[in-house]
Image (cartoon, rainbow, N blue to C red; front, side):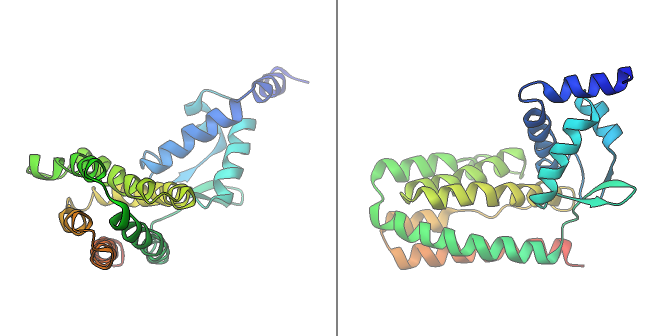
Length: 218
C-alpha cells in the first residue's frame, strides 16, 4: 500500500470528515460558490477541501442523491443548472405549505409574534437597494412564519426547500437585483384574516416564481 492510499484511508477514517466535507460542499452549492452548470473533479474538490478523495466521493454521492449535483461518467460531477422545471416544482411546493402556514398564523397571531415578523422585514424600509441583507431577511421571515404556524413538519420541510430556493435567489442576483416586500402579508396577519393572509402569501410566492421564470426561462 503506497503513501497516497494510506493517507486516503486515514483521512476517511477520521470521525466526521465525510460530514465536514459534505457540509462544506453543500454550503458552496447553496451560495453558488460552485456555480450552476460548472464541472467538478474529485481531485480539485479534495484540494479545495484539504482532504483526500475518499470523503469527497462519499459526500458527492450524498449530494447527488439530494439533487444538488449530477455524476458525469469519466468527467466527475456537474452542478445542476437552474431549470424551469426546478423553479416550478419548488414554488409549487412552497405555495402549498406556506399558504397553509400563513392561514394558521393569522388565526393565532399575538402582538409579540407580529412584532417579531415586523422586526425581521424592517430592512425593507431601511435600505434603498437590494442586497444580501434583503435575502437573509426574506429567508428569516418565511422560516419564522413556518415556526409560528406551530407545525414542526412544515418548518422542517420549508428549511429544506429554502436551501434550493436560496441557490436560485443567490444566482439571480448576478442577473437582476429586485425585492418583493412582505408588507401585505403582515397587514393581513395583523387583521387576523386567515383567507387574506393565505391569498397575500400566494401572491407573494407567485410573483417570486414569475420573476425567476423570467430570469431563467429564456
